[in-house]
Length: 249
Image (cartoon, rainbow, N blue to C red; front, side, top):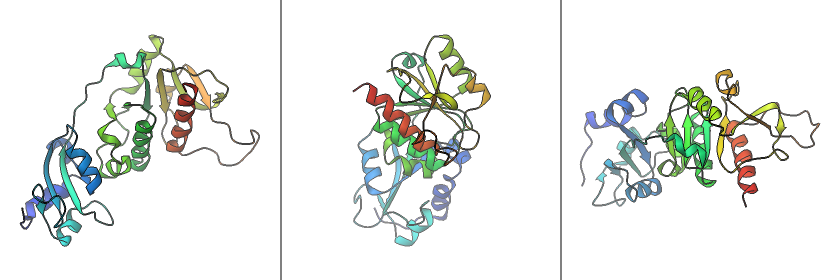
């Protein structure tokens, strides 16, 4: 299909950069041939695909390079863009008993969130629970940073403090990183439980920290080194998840 995009179409696609409009329309944006190809092969429903000539011929609306520049959320526009329906995943608290789950307490940088979702996918963690103030996982920057992992990892937004409190009372291990925590490489780690990662600036909030039953610390090398104050939250997540999974090998 080849046609000129209408002003209304362009405005609609552009509006999906805003969470309010994503929520209203129930749609998000995905860009790039590889990601869109993965979405086409997944259960997610695509409302409309726009592509340059020669890309997704027969299934996409062909647009000009100028039009792609106008609708793209990227500094360097890709060759295709899709408007995709947001999936709705029901959260089953029962998974906390037999799976390793990531919990994000107000992680606000979209790049960090996208990287963490990608890490979760890499380490076989398919459930991520987030506080309401955590960045929206369907923000275009987050979607691109996940590199397709958003299709395989279920992300839930809920009252995190209450969820952690219930899990802790039920005897489910709740891990969190603290300066006064136990050395990650010496502490006992379970195959199932919740790993809480905190906000970029203030770490884990008091409300969520109250339910942490096992405090962990990622030691520097050497252990008495006084260098950087802390690790980026996505980097810290990678280190922690790698150690949890290493123990199960």
